[in-house]
Length: 456
Image (cartoon, rainbow, N blue to C red; front, top):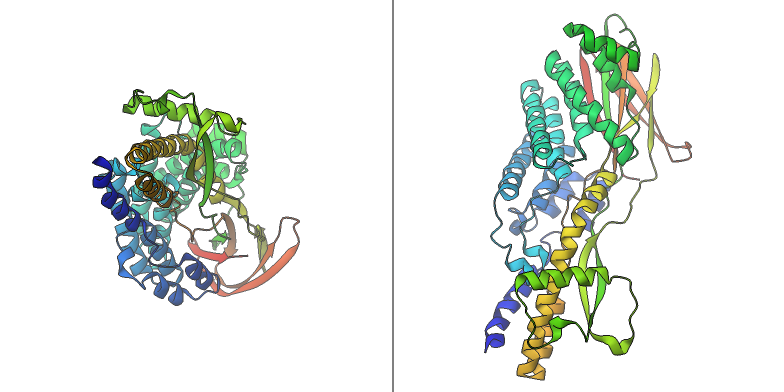
């Protein structure tokens, strides 16, 4: 009997779904309180998670904020290698996922998550005073961006604009004007698409940087073209340096599970005993079910209500969405340079049709298995149906400690030590919080990099 043979297998799969070895709720609570040691203890409470990519993402970021920059880079390096390996090779559990949960598919990370590894590793190297290594991360990010663009002619540069912009700043810092110019051109192109797709305003500084570098490199034609578009950049203050402050706010929304019910009708060929049930037929029937979503049918027409679980996002915008930095020599407002929530949702939106079809096809295969089992006995049928329900869960894995949005404050200051007042505002532009950065050292003809995070 085929059903008897598959029952232990399904039961084993059910058990393998298990629970996360750590509580993200506890991790995020400690994270919000600035207790990064406690967040790390929670993450490391059970070593079973160490080979999993989401764990590596969370651990890399927690150690970054805990000023454990070497440890953060080691963790992110493992995450990068793991992600690249899973992204470029066939996944051995691919077939298994058609009859169980997508949670059994190896998680390779999203495009924007893989890019942000290089953002945090680059910043780690900045803090470790290892500029050459920071530039290695910029080059890795650039190659990854090119890989995405080559692989998909419709790639919309989700996650790309910010990485390219930061790379331009880091290349400038290292005196690599040519690579900085190339990075700013990437940023210009990507932000133009961001402006349309995600609503992120084009940063004027990107254009001014192109004008400045085209002049420095002697690219007269490009200088004239960019200057006509963006105007002349402001002149530098003599004996001054530049503050580069990356402000991160809130949390990216976590994926949640959404249940959808599709009606299998009594007249559907797939429920007939002599129906053709090969893979092609099941996939086509899956598409038919998807088209039935939200349609109403009479109870007498329905053979079975097929419940499937898919991942979904719900907006999780923070209260604080603005920053101003002020010193005795003037101030600057932060500009939005990355909207991770929008990037996550845009990426998910592009993936949803494939996820939906795979999920519905899996549900149909489970239903057909239930029908076969039910023919062998009502008890066996009920047991298989129960296992189908238990193993139906959405893949909600993601990098949950990422910020919701990233702002950039870029301002020139006289060389010396400065106290900087930070003012944070909500969507109505009302000031809701302040803080001070004491004794920030600005060196002449150099850049000082800082990052800051709020969670409200």
